[in-house]
Amino acid sequence: MAKELFFIIVGSIFVNNFVFSRFLGNCPFLGVSNKTETAIGMGIATTFVLTMTGVAAYLIQNYVLVPFGLEDFLQIVAFILVIASLVQLVEMIVLKVSPTLYNAFGIFLPLITTNCIVMAVALLIPLNNYNLVESIALGFGAGVGFTLALALMSGIREELEFADVPDALKGPAIVFITAGLLSMIFLGFTGLVPLA
Amino acid sequence: MQLIKDFVNGIWNENPIFRIVIGICSALAVTTSANNGIAMGMALTFVLTCSSILISLLRNIIPSKVRIPCYVIVIATFTTVVDLFMKGYFPALYNVMGIFIPLIVVNCIVLARAEAFASKVGPLRATADALGMGLGYTWAITLISIIREIMGTGSVFGYKILGAGFTPWVIAILPPGAFIVMGILVGLMNLITRKTANSADGR
Image: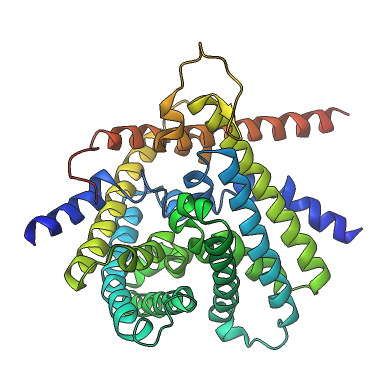
């Protein structure tokens, strides 16, 4: 049991990093990776939402959708609604706890709803038949992986400000190429854990 | 006239992939072969057009405070339609695309067009805009997938076009290839836009 959990967490952080090898969450990845501070804040907010999503998706799938035979055609609608409400909750908490952080997130906090990682985690749980603990591990691992990707990228982008980038590649283009190189590094983790 | 303008807007000026750079998750993930690119483009265009029409028709009924959840439900419904349709009729394609078909529901393009355009104009203009955006998305990801397929396997749409002497660059169909091809294409688009803008100024 402990071994499987370890595989799920390490797998989702490094081997199948949600940003670099599954291509999920690229919009916030490009949007908030300018500054390390914002990037890490966004990463932590997303990790929190993702872990909660793990729990919520498991419960909804196994105690609401499957018993009533709705899992085929109501799954997407049910999951997106649960995620939207979770994000709303996090937004209220952040506004109360740290208005500075809230201002820094700006438009990106409500956008966690449309962060594909959150929806993907919800969909992957029934797909892989994970139990509750495994679901939490997947959500948490995905969040940490996303935070790691954001932190790495923002560190590089802060340095890129001073680099002499060709005019046409300024902006998103150079970020994509940098992400490609980072993704190549993450390919090195292939085979670290057995594939699920 | 306005309709044509709305339609063309998404194809070049505000191309979702190359100019605005949104909705790129699916654009990077499914573009390992040209077939997947076109299929994904069609699926997204369908969801985008249907939800834009419906949201545009309902724009005076939906209260502005709960508009986002309403939009999301509309989009989720059409995504479910596409999901079940693909699962039923194209199981092989569906297996390759994996979770990226249901993930159309969180594709930023659909929600962005609903919020920024469809909720403000009539159904005709909304349709024109959605079709333009969908077409812009489709040609962009088809281009990415053709480049990746040629470099990674030496074929297009499954047909071999490069001879036996060609050594495939496997990296192009692996994740890093997607990012790098995308980066170079966005750079090229910037270059082309600047060139045309400059020559327009010169005249």
